[in-house]
Length: 157
Image (cartoon, rainbow, N blue to C red; front, side):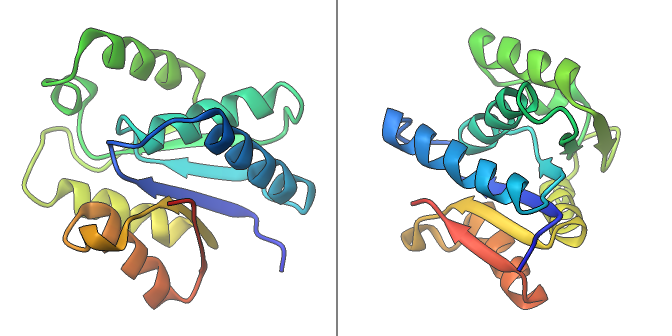
């Protein structure tokens, strides 16, 4: 099946290895060759950032693909507790994104869940880094949303 729109969800704490990065790059490239154009990410550090940076790298070879950020709240509030390096990477990604959609201006208890639901709504395939032992996480919740929608879930964990 050809997928046009891909969303990403994953844990903030991942082990970024050269093998993982290559697997992600190769998987995304194969999906692009098959017709994927739109990539939706939530702007969190960890898996989201790795996926966003991979899409940005792939845009150099496939300039027609688009990176869309679906953010839970304002940049200032989303990154309030982040380290400076994470914030710098975040703003670089934000500036490179083709579009940015905000769920809310200010953080509220359900804004992350709404962001995740919006990304699943927009996608016909979900690429995740999800460990089953972390079922209560936002990533677990998003994977279950994707499964309920009946879209393909590709898990890198």
